Image 1: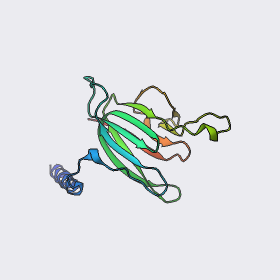
Image 2 (image 1 turned 90 degrees about the vertical axis):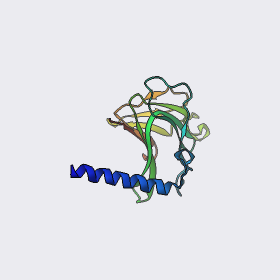
Image 3 (image 1 turned 30 degrees about the vertical axis):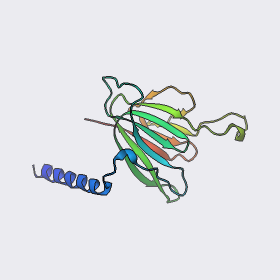
Image 4 (image 1 turned 45 degrees about the vertical axis):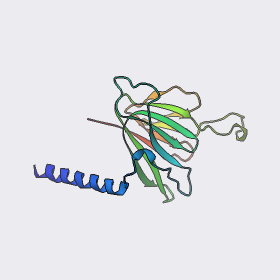
Length: 171
């Protein structure tokens, strides 16, 4: 019982602190974050492109990193986390916590420039990493896909650095 009270008080204090840091700016107006070695990352809620189905919970969020643009449905929470790359440099990435039934729609795949490849074709820059170690390449004109429990996140194929981690909301 005492642990529960301490936990509830801690959560309340953290919520108040987050609210104070917020300066009353809604989450929808988050500005893109940039660092010296990467392009801008922004996450901002969008209204669903169509009427939500009865199974849709949460919000529809748009994720943008450079020319990669994804729409994710059934998002419960968005947060930013950081890690250090192999060189010890800080790296921030977004985390989308999603309700069951969430889907990803690729609005822009940010394929490589075809004039720079030996075969004259564009190649994917981004992929979905699966728990098995396999990957799904993100390409132009790909169908929307459901977020499953074995999907770890979206990452850059060249650097292997996450830009968007996908988590399931467990009630």
